[in-house]
Length: 261
Image 1 (cartoon, rainbow, N blue to C red):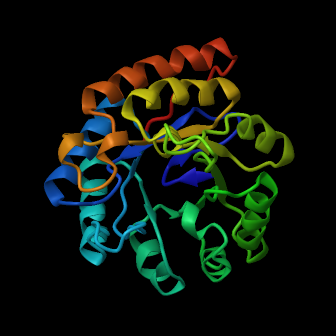
Image 2: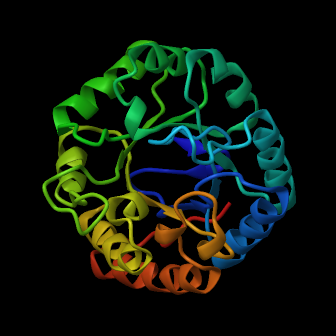
């Protein structure tokens, strides 16, 4: 399947999707889009609508954020991946997005899964915070059953008793999902660890385990990010990750390299 013109899946180059957690301003989004493109990223991520644990934290710019994402795509040439929160927003988000993300909190929002299944854009489905592999696959079936065959699964860590990291990244889920299904599988080491200095090593572990792509949070000034700055890579750190990924991919026999838009 494709995100814009970028193929994702077995036999295709690794697709690295990167950008800020949230669309927090035009300047940050455009600057990050250019940096992601320059480093070799394949697509831009950024949340116009953000589900947050606290209602008092930044929850995105909404429709204005979608307009900024559309401008970022025009400026950088990168296809856009962004989250949709409610069935009523699917049409508006799909007008801008090249791929609709279903976040961990909505993995079992069956009305939303039905709605994204009834439109044609690919769907990036994240594993729920405490979801089993079987539950993730059954959620994917909701989208598939509505006629949308373009589903990408995302391992992003699960909640365990461990408190030092944000989540426990379940690296064995990657080869397991690839054995159980034909769907592409990507990894989100940013949410999987919650700490910027763990993102690169866990990303490389995911590539070694067979991931078809990565979903990485990148920000020009993580200390000033309005959302998830503590797990966001600086531009320099993202460039270093992008330089390391092809070496690991080749070491495990993935010869297609890294995708570019």
